[in-house]
Figure 1 (cartoon, helix red, strand yellow):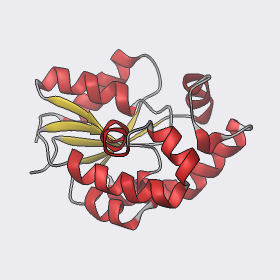
Figure 2 (tube, rainbow, N blue to C red; figure 1 turned 120 degrees about the vertical axis):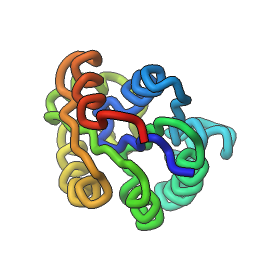
Figure 3 (spheres, helix red, strand yellow; figure 1 turned 135 degrees about the horizontal axis):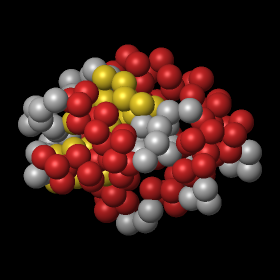
Length: 166
């Protein structure tokens, strides 16, 4: 099975929020790969990353993505899912949508959230993550949607871009 849509993008781009909203609109499930990973490993995705390291985390993340896309759902991924070649291969077979907006908006949305890869200097870390991942986001996505603004505006742009569910 292929998910109805898979949402990728940097932390704060709206993947989880927009996955739930789009799934509600389409009348299907929303699946977050961080939730799938957490259920598999018995702790939060952030805790697993912090305690087991990025290499172990990325292996579990690819497995979680495989489970998530096998559902009639809108899938929200972790921002770094594109780091793994296996994940990129899987994303390239899906209706993958890159959610993006300006770094200043992302930083405002992230606030005090638990983001181990952003560390003590989130602005610099976010710019580094964008530079590292942007080419991969572009490579695996069929659409890029600007998620600046209120959730309703971003959802309208996303729905317009997708037109109808797969």
